[in-house]
Image (cartoon, rainbow, N blue to C red):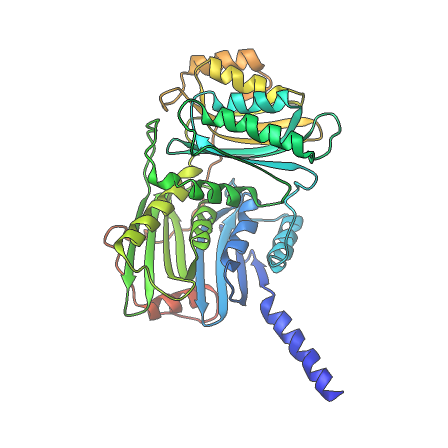
Length: 442
């Protein structure tokens, strides 16, 4: 009996240690809410925590990650997109519950839908052709995300049968959908790399898009359209004495940036042991101390070059090119086919799209450029709005992630391309200080 009681207490201890503990504090920092997470370390736990925050469209101003031995501790300084602290108790409660249950499979709201995964060569009007095929095949698009990068396109589209409202399960219909979409993606010159997959599986859309583009090796390709965007700077150096590869990323700040970088590191089987993330104005500075899951450092020049390419691609895939157009109107069959056909007829190229449907209302976001990848002519935009409906299609500014309410502090000194590698002891002490576990790190 005593032995069983001891086992019971041991199981409770293990469960307590393996369950992340979350503390949300609005009192310490005057300009941001602190989200503190500590847990037993396991592969992917950092990504789980970051994913919860980014799924709520929160802006991560700063973050400190430390993982010593088998324990994981981190602090995120977060605000909403307007730069305000989190005050909604339902949001705070959701963060606590979600991070504490990240080891469980969570539905992302796409149960009862059929998922279509598409990758291929991007071209003007491709999205119009895809949605036209789906409309012709009686597929109702409920939700979708489309990314383009380096002349490639990846899309995850969730559909149901227009007539029954049920997921599409008939094998002949699935084969027809795959064949028709594959022909569209192939075009005249993409016979080998165009891919279509139909799945009933529930997945995290944005992580899956990263995986699809990574598998498509978009990071190795050169863009067909030359977008005039600011490039990210990435360096990777080995700190052999301390047993870490040090990754520095410097780029324009935006929402979900940390998720994109951590997602790529995790899917490439790297483990983040320590990290510091800071923002200054519209710039972001990220520093990671990593190893492979097997404990090995970045071991060759080709591997280092590939890691740099993949991280640059992760930053750039979601970078918003062009004018942001928001469509809000009653949902109907062929809506997306009609809207994207209007874009194509007016020479607009869709670089990114987010499609959603709520209570029979279509809420869609499109980022568009002209055919050469430059900003579209305002007259063209107005002509498109006239055609679709001025009240339905509106030009919107990108959400502000700039830091008007940023804390006064020294300019971030993470150097990219000649980074100074601090001593590991200093880094760990600094992270423990920011975690509130020691009074000073000097």
